Amino acid sequence: MLNVCEIFTSIQGESTRAGRLCVFVRLSGCNLRCVWCDTRYSYSNDGITMSIEKILREVGQYNIKLVEITGGEPLLQSEVVHLCEKLLSGGYEVMIETNGSLDISAVPKGIKRVVDVKCPDSGSGGSFLVDNLKHINDNDELKFVLASINDAVWARQFCDKHSATNKCQVIFSPVSSSLPYATLADWMVENRLDDIRLGIQLHKVIWGNDTRN
Image (cartoon, rainbow, N blue to C red; front, side):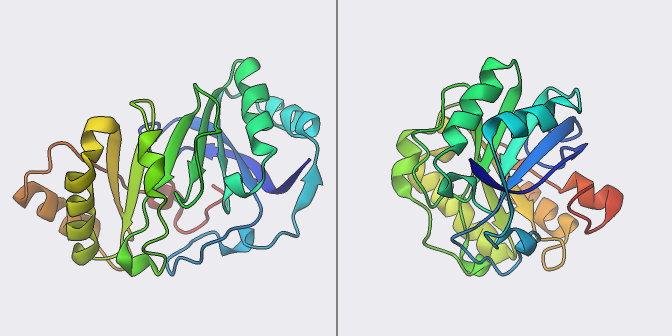
């Protein structure tokens, strides 16, 4: 059984799959409190308790092959591993987005893991589990949500220290309310960050702050 906040379909707004139709399975509960979080309604554990089979039936109704498991923090619920396995065996392309503070090693091979590294201005800096870098592979993505150029400098230093861009795709995603897209883009051009991708939240460009679209 899993505690589910919501299941819905929309355009994938982030990651290297941006622009594709996607079914989102958002699980309830989170162990971090980032100041810029746009899904605070998922913090509560008062979601709907659903069996794996019921989740699979609801996902199947959309007839969309890309599925993202997100939160909250999905790895707080151990049964998420079983959900991943069932989705993979059902022929789905599966992503899981995690805040990086919990062990990712149990996530089944074949799942695209989008692993956040929290920057200082998030209010959750220092939460990243560095041992996760041992498990990252070239199917995965590391994402840095940046609230300032100071965050960007810190993230660049982190990537250099840990050879992050040699392990997987790295994405810098600005908090648009505090770091304009153009400001970060100009900084990336100036500093020749040709091994890092700029990630803009496409769904917000289209629909504004409605995270369910």
